[in-house]
Image 1: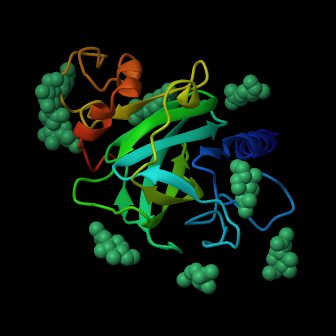
Image 2: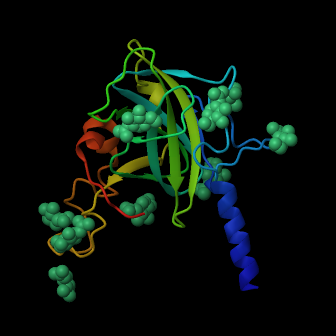
Image 3: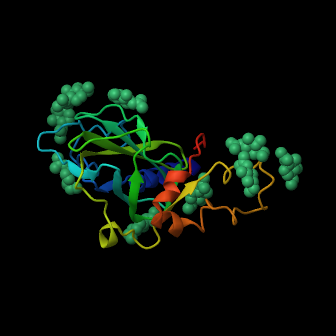
Length: 219
Ligand SMILES: *[C@@H]1O[C@H](CO)[C@@H](O)[C@H](O)[C@H]1NC(C)=O
Ligand SMILES: *[C@@H]1O[C@H](CO)[C@@H](O)[C@H](O)[C@H]1NC(C)=O
Ligand SMILES: *[C@@H]1O[C@H](CO)[C@@H](O)[C@H](O)[C@H]1NC(C)=O
Ligand SMILES: *[C@@H]1O[C@H](CO)[C@@H](O)[C@H](O)[C@H]1NC(C)=O
Ligand SMILES: *[C@@H]1O[C@H](CO)[C@@H](O)[C@H](O)[C@H]1NC(C)=O
Ligand SMILES: *[C@@H]1O[C@H](CO)[C@@H](O)[C@H](O)[C@H]1NC(C)=O
Ligand SMILES: *[C@@H]1O[C@H](CO)[C@@H](O)[C@H](O)[C@H]1NC(C)=O
Ligand SMILES: *[C@@H]1O[C@H](CO)[C@@H](O)[C@H](O)[C@H]1NC(C)=O
Ligand SMILES: *[C@@H]1O[C@H](CO)[C@@H](O)[C@H](O)[C@H]1NC(C)=O
């Protein structure tokens, strides 16, 4: 009985935890049936790179927007970048700190700056890899191919709206460091990276992502 309940719960989570990339256009719709694609497969859900007539979106030279369609009450989101036409190595991160998304629906991150040590030129090809992970720690993958363009712009206004109740926060080591007794008990209220209060701030602030260089947070 218990086993069946657990199995059903696991199946329900599998069904809901998958996600889509709304912008830039993803390599392929990995949510539709009748394909060999699976979001469980690293690095890009089993969608080959450099597909003939594949989607490729112009993206600004300094970094741009990413819009996701999330199907889970919350998930950790990692966004990585790889250079080239047919990318297999995603060795740059656009989310140097752990991003925790809350809510079910569209999440638009207005601007993800490139790492400071990476400079790209007009016409350079690259791919974006989005990884989501939930409480179990298992990860799901999707990719989108881009061309860096000097005249490309990040999404703004209505083009970059998150659905109501969908937001993200940046998790710092402090927020998850239960041994740091100098923080106020039971809360991260005064903490600029608290999961609750800062969502709007982070959403409207590129700087929120850029300055929070905290590595080594376990998932
Ligand atoms: C391109 O993007 C569209 C819209 O997101 C998607 O439906 C399609 O599967 C993608 N891939 C290809 C190869 O067209
Ligand atoms: C899935 O892969 C198998 C084996 O490579 C192939 O025969 C089949 O046509 C593929 N299906 C689709 C929908 O691409
Ligand atoms: C892309 O790279 C993969 C892995 O290196 C390779 O198997 C594949 O043939 C390449 N595809 C194209 C279209 O270059
Ligand atoms: C997500 O939203 C859809 C439509 O609003 C709803 O049917 C579904 O139950 C929600 N899922 C979760 C996990 O909240
Ligand atoms: C990332 O990988 C590419 C080739 O796959 C390589 O040219 C580049 O130097 C690597 N960058 C870093 C920071 O490791
Ligand atoms: C991520 O967000 C969820 C709900 O929004 C919360 O339960 C969880 O504790 C958060 N994780 C971290 C590390 O802050
Ligand atoms: C511990 O908390 C204090 C006060 O909130 C903060 O200044 C400090 O950076 C934290 N230390 C660590 C290691 O997170
Ligand atoms: C957590 O806080 C303790 C006490 O301040 C500190 O020694 C430790 O380095 C912190 N760990 C992390 C991952 O920040
Ligand atoms: C943190 O505080 C708890 C009780 O408030 C105490 O038992 C524990 O020893 C403290 N840990 C450190 C590393 O100071």
